[in-house]
Image (cartoon, rainbow, N blue to C red):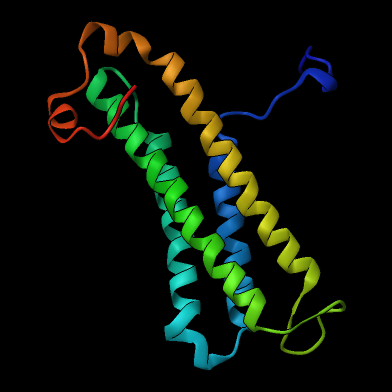
Length: 161
């Protein structure tokens, strides 16, 4: 049991992976309810974007940082997870605009509550990934002071930390 009072608790750094898994699950659930004619136009792409969010979140979490190159690779995966979350948000917006929803969710419709849960999961992923990126910037600053940015990253000019 934690000695930290509930009002002082903050989300765990690993929570972005759990939320990415929920996001993938919501995306699959909603994709099943969409019309079949949308499969190649929108549904398949949305599921792929959600899968990539989960893949990059797990990849970033699996990296043990011991040098600047590892920190760069972790940052790259977190950036990719954030970018694919943005892509998924665009697809969900398009689905909501084009596909009718019912408050009760009966029939072959996605309920408004399901859309709301989906959008909340995407928004939460944005916040969690950005929070992890900010804490990583502070936590791994010593690697950049000692080693400098990795040579591959400095040549490409990808990160300005």
